[in-house]
Image (cartoon, rainbow, N blue to C red; front, side, top):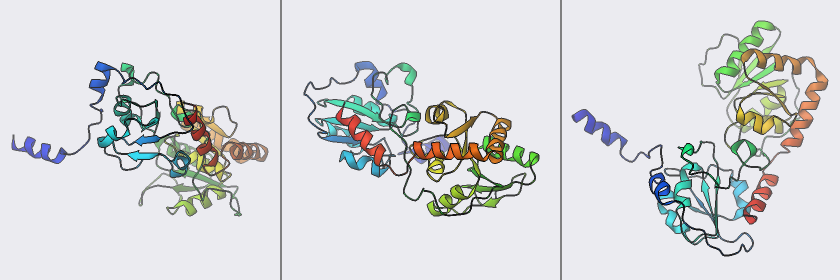
Length: 308
């Protein structure tokens, strides 16, 4: 028994993974919306998820909204606002129960909606990039842009420690002993079955790596700032895991190859390495998809909020 009490003290203050506001929401339904007409952007409030101190959305995207930030525990302060946005699905239950607002929506931040199968997310407008369920165009943080550096024809970049991409790199190494590998955003002391160069942390070092490699094996597309989008903004040819988010983000753009297995990722990477024309096509498509910066994303978000 003492050990249980000790454990309870350790967990004090930890937010539950399931928002308990779902109980009243499912029982009573969302609060009615006001019938007042839209008048420009109006008063926009952004309610953070429980335990968060940042919205999880690039600040440059939110600037055009001039939204006031409200903590989850103070969500009642957003009552009466013209538009109330939830910063992630964990904040959505409290936003849906707010009275006196004209309209509501969610800015998804990467985590799935908990217990969505119960139907409580139905009808909630989603304002985000395509891979998060919205229609906004992608952007990239400042610093991710083409650089006047030499692109090594033999250099393959692997970003992060995703098992799929690391296995693909091992497959490439087994097939082609002339290739050189660089690994970015990996922990110090990482041991892999192939030699590799480490990439220093930070935007400048990453942008240099993205501009120097011939092809990059990217991790899955997640959140507002997927590594694949930063790579495309730097002019990098990219291979991305073939999952629902990857297909939504890149499936019909021509900017990247999608592959579901290590062997398929290796095939796709070799196709880029051995075909200069294909590589150029991918780079041009990447620039068209992610021109850099967040200006077009912010403008599109402001338009969507005004149209709610």
